Image 1 (tube, rainbow, N blue to C red):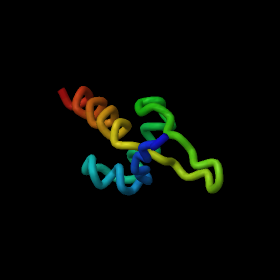
Image 2: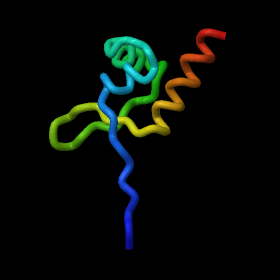
Image 3: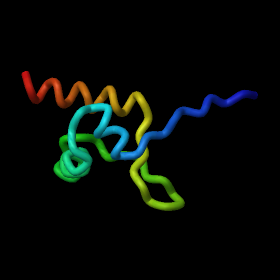
Length: 65
């Protein structure tokens, strides 16, 4: 059985992709604007996958409409 590993992105990588500040991603998550990210069980860091980035992109676009 072959499992597909999805690349995990950190909060800075997500911010860079979306063209926003790292703090914006964190603040929006705390305010409930963005859904809570998955946390790495070892270090507690936020982890995102590409699908998460697309959801965040849509949320940002709706906010600017």
